[in-house]
Length: 113
Length: 114
Image 1 (tube, rainbow over the protein chains, first blue to last red):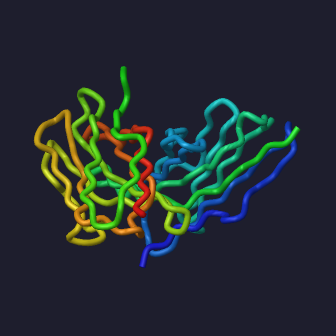
Image 2 (cartoon, chains in turn orange, brown):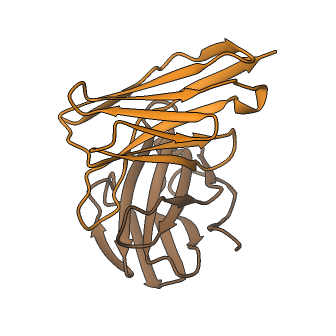
C-alpha cells in the first residue's frame, strides 16, 4: 500500500541554521509533490510545488528537492527564524485530471533563539 | 478574497447525535475537498467533488458519513449517528480544476463527540 513518511519526532534547531525536513514515500509514483505549512489551530497553507522532472525548486529562503529514484523530497529552510516554527506537511499528487493529494503526517519544526 | 469559510468552528456533541459541518469554497473554485485530521492518522482525504459532482469518496470511513454539494458555493459533511472516534478536526479545501493548482484550506471545524 502507499506510504508517506515524514519525521514523526519534532525537529529543534537554532535560529540562523538551516532546517532540513524529509519526505519519503513508497508504492507511489507522484507526478508532483507539494509542501504545506500548518500552524496550530489553522489549516495547511501551500508553500511550494515541484514536478517529477524538476530536481530542485527555490522560493526565497525555501528550497525543495525531489529525487524520484530515491523516492524522497527534502525541504530546506535557510537562515531559519522563530517565525518558521510550525508543522510542515508534504503532499503527493499523482497527476492526471484530478487534484487529489495524499498528505504525510507532518514534521513539527521549532526554531529556538 | 474571503478564503474558504467553514462553520461551525467548534462543535461539541453527544454520541448518537447528528453533526453537520458546512463549507463555502473560494469563489471561482470548482474542486472541493473534505479532510479529517487526527494526531494518530494525520490529514486524511474523505471525499472530493469536481463541479459539484462527487468524484472519490473512498476515504469516507463508514456509511454514517455523507457529503453533498448542492451548488458551487456550498457543501456539507454530515455524520449520523456520531461516535467518540469521530472526534477530529475537519477541513474543507478548494481549488481550480486543471493545472496543478494548490489547495486552499479553511480554518477547520474542531469536533468533539462525548
